[in-house]
Length: 76
Length: 152
Image (cartoon, rainbow over all chains, first blue to last red; front, side):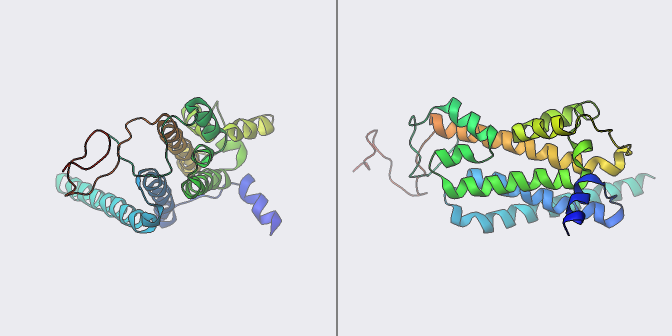
């Protein structure tokens, strides 16, 4: 287990396909947590606010991607 | 104008420079010193987890590389002296040859963590200096007089 953990810091895994896209989700979560942790007056509201912001960003980026793909297909 | 409602926050009670330095040294420490413990813990976990996820994915030597990823390394230094320590500890090792599209996730994670902590540092400095601090009012609250009492 320790060797596996150490190998993680020394050997670079290759992300392709869907796993590459899924790596976006934790990054957006971290951005949402930090943003809301700085802005919210009450920390008890954090989980709900973070979830809402996270979903908004992810859905927005998916929508943007689909929209750009549609435009690309139409122009191609 | 930023609006805060932290009852624990008192303007001018801490040296903003020291708070900023502490927030850079350890993410969230600035808020901790200002008495906002839960906020500090959340910020520490979020920033550190993001940075170390990047390092774990990309490997220490590749992620902390000021020659190959100069601007991203500058962004990473926002996380604190641990970035410089990582670089110095592994500087003599050979950088693995990895094509950019296969490695950008690690560098982006670590860089975004640094940029996020820069925002955290600025927030801590702002809270310490009491910049733009106004109490949050209820939507239908009556206007308050300068001494804080509600106008009759």
